[in-house]
Image 1 (cartoon, rainbow, N blue to C red):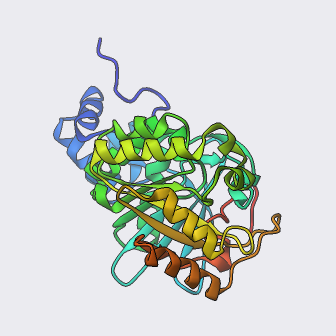
Image 2 (image 1 turned 120 degrees about the vertical axis):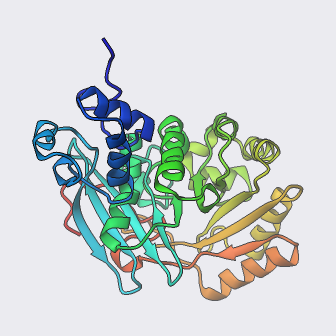
Length: 347
């Protein structure tokens, strides 16, 4: 007797067209209905099989309790710049945050990979909120489909810069990216995965052969300062990170982007910029500067515009490619470093 590809409580979201065809066939329907189910799941954003009008009504009723894998919107918080923060309630009651960031030409989703985060970065609201669990691949995919359906615009870009450390959930991360690419239709080169750095995981991620952009959160140009900002950095010396990044470039042919949160009076001086340029010299890279976004339980200050410009100019004068991230969603605590899981949040 054949075992179903989607056993009880296994979500349909995340299954391929072939797997969905097997699933419907095992339940008495012709295989072509697998293609229909695939379309309704990934392109029409169906939340329940009862909604699929292309299926016979009697059969829909038979499979009505099948777990599709969709979340509920617990809170939707728009901002004046068009950014929308979502708190999504998962099947077990956990709350995860995701953010839709529209421009005139594209829609980017900031995706979470965990409920909370174990890395405890001192300036980050998510890290201060603790860690609950990894997200399943369907819970990662669901975030993208939720934003796409609610905002009524096709998602074109993804940044795994929401809650959690993606490289601590590599298996589900890679599986979700493959589905988002092959089934939802988002180009791999439009996907960025951000990591604070986990020993051995950058090279492991490179072996997945994805053509995504890797963004490594440095936030400091020397080990001592990095450990002050990121306590977990003690286990992963900065030179080891850079060696792994070089391997990543060699294995994938893709450049690495270095993220650097500017904290006023701590790491935002021209001298620190010079040290950073010296640190990353020697392989193709890019620095993305992020002016600090304030959170209630940290004493760091956002740098002045002048300090940001001077830091960026110092890097450019040393032939380092640099950009400054535009702050979006600040009014809804949806900007970089401000996301936090709250089970009963009404903010």
